[in-house]
Image 1 (cartoon, one colour):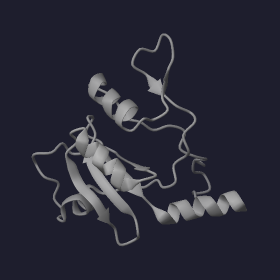
Image 2 (tube, rainbow, N blue to C red; image 1 turned 180 degrees about the vertical axis):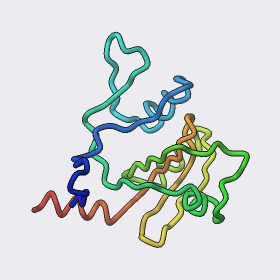
Image 3 (cartoon, rainbow, N blue to C red; image 1 turned 180 degrees about the horizontal axis):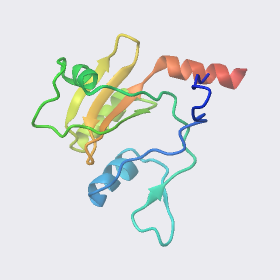
Length: 152
């Protein structure tokens, strides 16, 4: 349920989200090959890969940088040697252990590896080629909510 001010804008859903790509080869490797997202290409739009067949956003949040740093590194300061992320994206996966191994096998430097969060989520975090804070997750409470909606 959305609680906007009377004169506010009523947002219905997240209509789109994705990284702004600077290095097409690195981004192509992560999103199309390693994560195997169902992306397609349109003639005349070179480099623009997209999908309208993925499930919607289950959780949207404004995540303060100090809290993201705490989640990744155990302290509230983001390390100076890493790019400061401008966005975050979590993808819930079928098998978090296998997905984590695949990231490692493909050379991604993990910020967290199969970390159990207090709210029951298991998360593996890394930075995308664009500097976005990414995570592959197993989130039982979001899966339970989806199952409940399907049976209702």
